[in-house]
Image 1 (cartoon, rainbow, N blue to C red):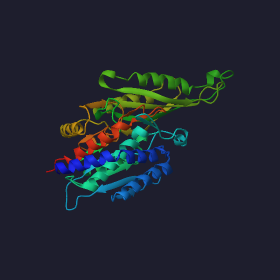
Image 2 (image 1 turned 120 degrees about the horizontal axis):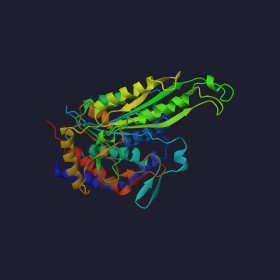
Image 3 (image 1 turned 90 degrees about the horizontal axis):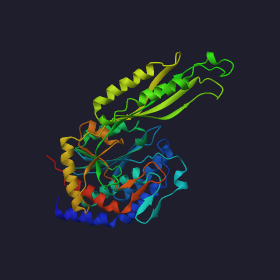
Image 4 (image 1 turned 135 degrees about the vertical axis):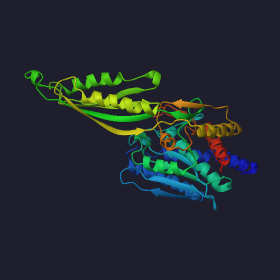
Length: 388
């Protein structure tokens, strides 16, 4: 790496603001909810077009149910160094038709659209940084890009791919949206997403009330007990965010279910809290009810290691050189795929994408003026990667 390479990369990225916005518009205007394989793979095809235009090798790792994993490689001929991995997901939380209802739009320095910040803009800067490094070289090691398909539902198909690629990498940069403060994310909570089902007994609530066993009544008791496990001081939170059940207003509910969101900081708290939840589910307050617990998916916490602290110091200096104000690393209660790579021992930074906010809502926004400096920072940090 030379100063002239850094200058060339910086100048080129600065010239690419409009092409980055154009690519962002294209992918935001494609529906790609986590269960919409067709839409998610259509987004992948648009990124494949970008890679082909810039002479970057790319390939898919197919999946029958969820979207394919998309890989790309900026090779370093003759190098046997472990690569840097640029990571991001292209699925969103929004239903089919959302892109048509509120397509990509710009108001002043902000852009709007489904998934624009979380995290299609982050993927866009990843692929443009890859293009810059392909064009000018200078990276001390190969650079891989991984664009996954199901992060918003805890990466059921992508987790093995992420962990495999994480183990093979020397460092991981995950371009989830930058914090609204402008900072990046250096640590995150872990999360477990669960569903519990309760079986009771139906009876006419007027004629045969005493014969009924209310699954909804049991659900109410379990919700109160589960929420009581929250320990704000330790960063443990429990939320039963979805419930359903019953047959009719005049029938004792024969069935009910709830969905639980558990968040934690300390990995040890996962086991103890999960054991407490299992005990609540196994113990009936309403006699005659039975219940089962299912784990739908989970994220591991992003815990900052000494190696990731050193990685952050390099990134922070690069941010200053890219014209950003002094930034800090923030803790986030939200989960991300970065926890998987950190948990296999690879230094990981997260929240490196352009700055945005109100994610997962119709008001989701992106600061367009943050695109170039965040892409430049990422490129400079990679160029300054130390190898043995």
